[in-house]
Image (cartoon, rainbow, N blue to C red; front, top):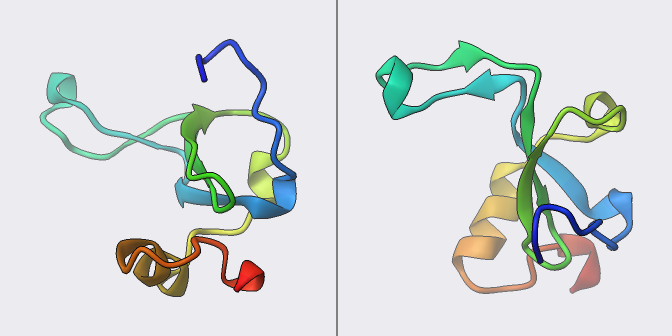
Length: 80
């Protein structure tokens, strides 16, 4: 999927990994405020950065969801 294609999974599967943060080699990898947040889809694993209107209402990515992903289990605990 390219960045121009719309992600088609339902928003209930979206989680925020980092909210309003940016870090890069240009700023020494220090966290800085950003209008953008990093989003992951628990259904398909797609990850992107966005400043869309739905981001403030999107829940944060939990440690339980991360543990499931790292074990190779279903990313979305509701689908097990």
